[in-house]
Image (tube, rainbow, N blue to C red; front, side, top):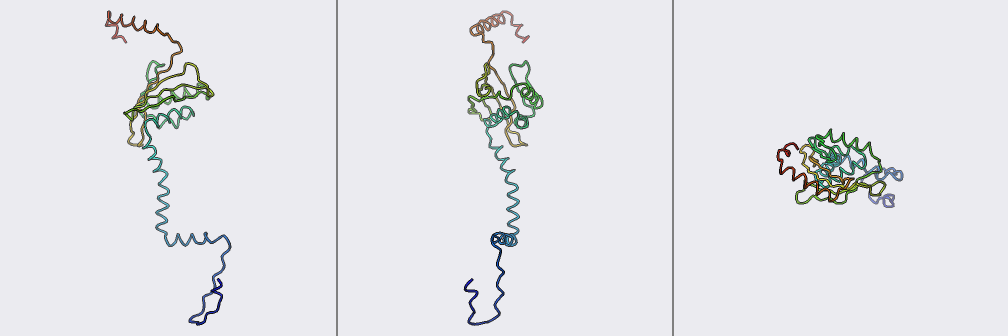
Length: 215
């Protein structure tokens, strides 16, 4: 500023009027509009890419999720009593077998109805805890061992193991559960008596094989 205020030795043309002083704090604000006008097209492309990135990131994250990640998300949604989070993890034609019940649950709607009843009938403090989970060599087949806890304490007769098979949904580009089976610890433990029962039933089938057709 000191150089501008000094008189010039040779005057070729009238000196331009000095620029009006800018209010303090407006330097960056004044510079931004000029930058946008000079590079308007480039700025608009950048804005468009920023709006697309979140959706693209969500799709890529779903596509990169492993079968074990999907199963973990399934248990997490059940623990939070969040059916909306569980729904997209289950395939439309999924078959779910809980060996406590005589018949499997078939279809997403029937399975969600079962879990809605399950969530509404038990305490919100009762939660699934995964003990171990393994996808093995087949990345779309997952085995899980788990137990239930109530307020952080193990719940009696609640240990179980589950198997899940998953398949890629081409439309949503994410893995979904197409088959599941749960086996829960029995409250009554017959011990060695169970071996005697199996032996007796086998003896009957060997002598009356037609009875096996009734199963």
